Image 1 (cartoon, rainbow, N blue to C red):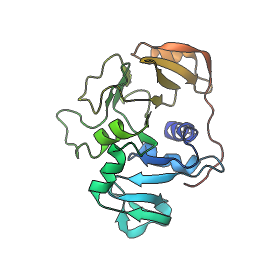
Image 2: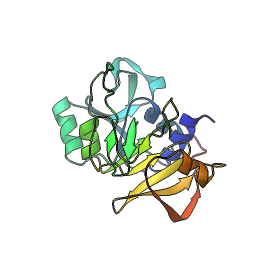
Image 3: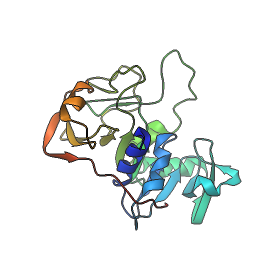
Image 4: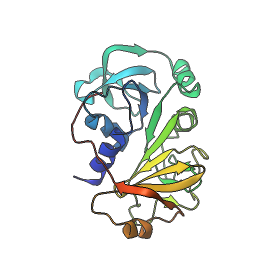
Length: 221
C-alpha cells in the first residue's frame, strides 16, 4: 500500500453516514474508494453540484471543481456558483478534505500558492476551510526535499488561520484540541521517535495514542 492510499483509507474512517463532503483535487478524491460498508456521503463540488458520482461513470459534459470528468448519482442537484458558495459559507458542508503544502501548530493551512511558481489560483479553498464544519488535511508528511510539512509556523502564504481540525499523513494522525496539536495515532510499524524526527511542529502525544486503523472494505459514495 502506497502513502496516498494509506492516507485516503484513514481519512475515509472520519466520514459519517449522511455527511455532505467536499473533496479537494488530487489525493482527497481517492477517499470515496474506501468508505466503510454502510457509509454513504453526498459529495459537493464548488462549481455547482450536490451528489457527484464516481469518475468511472463520468458524463462527457460534466466536470468537477478540479476539471476532471465526473458523474452524478440519482437525486443529485445542480446550481450556480453563488448558491454553491452560499452552502459552503453558510456552514452546510460537514467536512472538507483538502491537500496541504504546510500546516502549522496553530492550525493554520497553506495549500494554494508557492511564490515564484505558476499556480491556477486558490479556487474555493479559502471558503471551504473557513466554512466547513470540519477541515481534514490529507497530505504526505514531508516535502520532496525531505523537510517536514507540519511546522511551527507556515512559511508559505496562508489559505486560512486556525481552521484545521485534523491532519492525516502516511506516518501519523494529529488533531487540534483546545488550540494544541496532539498526536493521536501512528501508522502501523512507525515509531513515535520517527514521527518526532520528521515533524518540525511542537505537539503533545495523547495518553491513549494508538496504531492507525484504516478502512479495509471498498465502498462507493
